[in-house]
Image (tube, rainbow over all chains, first blue to last red; front, side, top):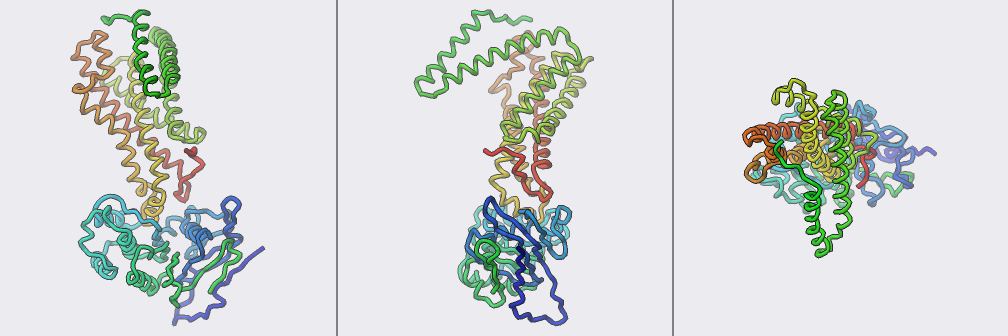
Length: 237
Length: 263
């Protein structure tokens, strides 16, 4: 049985002047399960560039699995993931991963001063082309309400909310095409939650958010991708 | 040789000393009585067999026999590293064998040729005695280092993924773990290098002094062997880790669970 979920046919498309809608991510005939539990059964779905997708179905329904498939942490039994016109495979994995800014649920910084860790990240092989923009760093820290003195502190002393915001800042500095955010506002208070939301929904990039925070789903700019269990029940709103 | 041989009575008298641990076993209910007896019996049988075997090996002093015995020791060390690190034998036997054999053989031949300046670097006494010391030590180091590395991979899987996604290569993302595991492996040797003579008189030195060598010569040998052990140990653990990294991850840089045995 073939499902073809054209989420967007129900959505009124507002073409932006002179911009052709480009598919950013495409799931093509994906099948994947764990043991007896089938999570994706011939799943077809595509997301256009610049869309803001919210995943808020109950836990255990495959939200993280979908992230895992996009990031190449999980391999589908059948089917393909296509990212920015590249089929995800061993030859393209590095290039594709380089397009993502991924915020994981439990963020761990290594040992040492915060600024040192940031510099170390910018020294990674894939990031050699990206200069650490200290001005932008300061502006973002300002916006997300982090004291600049924190850069000199040990990473061990960071609170959950500080880690979350710092990692978001680092991902933004790395200037990725697609942002995958797993519970990005879980450790933040209301005003910071809405700042994070505003930043990501206001940008041109493609953004995926896993969150059960109501403020995301209330926003009109967000497309909700919500399903129960097997993806046969997937629906768009 | 000046050292006195131990007679049957002597061995009996040293075995009598075992009543002390056996007493503690009873007193503290350590539940290791059987284990003590089995371990000691095994040691007796193994050492006596090796004694007989080495006697002939030293007597024949044949190139191929010497090398075969060295190879045998290398294989046993390899199996021991694989088993205690819960690696799959089928997949890792050859790579770990190379990681053990290459450093040991390189350092051993260098040692015999340039340090001891032997005419025949395959001389049984040196090849097997020095080789055995290097292997015994490297075995320890590899077990500590490889175990540390594999446990850390499992514990820090999310951090590893996150680092990959931040642009790190597999090697860069594993580097903190590599560092920690190499250090765990070599730190005991470094500590014993720093305290040798003050705290302990190592087996080799003791053996040579008992064997009639002057403390002067024994000291020089000890110094040389400790450096050789240190170098072999760091080389071998590095090779072992590289093999685990090369083989244990797939083309998406994800840990291949099927290469490792469950805890």
